[in-house]
Image (cartoon, rainbow, N blue to C red):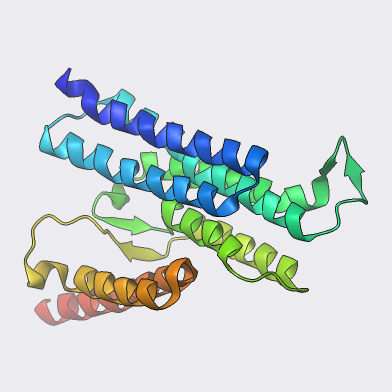
Length: 237
């Protein structure tokens, strides 16, 4: 039974993602749907934590985690964005079977890149300590924060540009430090603590609108950290 605990938590991640999709499609309450994606991210964090604490490692757990992530951080955010388009843009033209395929293109693009990113992560041995490219949950957080921003005339261009940027970042080789703590020492986790402090400050000031700025801060801190590490390595050499 102990071996199945991480898998059960992963299935809770999947369930939260499916719930987000249902809420977005049926009730059109995008803020609540976004919160369900956040809940899925908590389960995504704790399934890995549980596996490490229980010293459980299985191939099926790894595959199940990726499948759940495709739904929770790929499909669910894409549905939320499509419904955001639908709420704020006239869908009376260019529809087929009640679907505007022009505006479905960008959510579909995001799902495809998110799935590719997760598959790439599974076979990339270089991402055990640090990430290469933006993690899918981080990209999902940016998307689900968009309904909290006021919609205006040019928002469709901005949202579509954000999606394209996220697609590129997910499959890029941009080096990003891992958010996992191996210990609580300040020396080993300085940049993680800085990110946490800045994130809390941004969330207090801007609530969910802070998410894109937190992800941007994460990328900037990663570039600084990795640049400093390379300089230290050259000095030691």
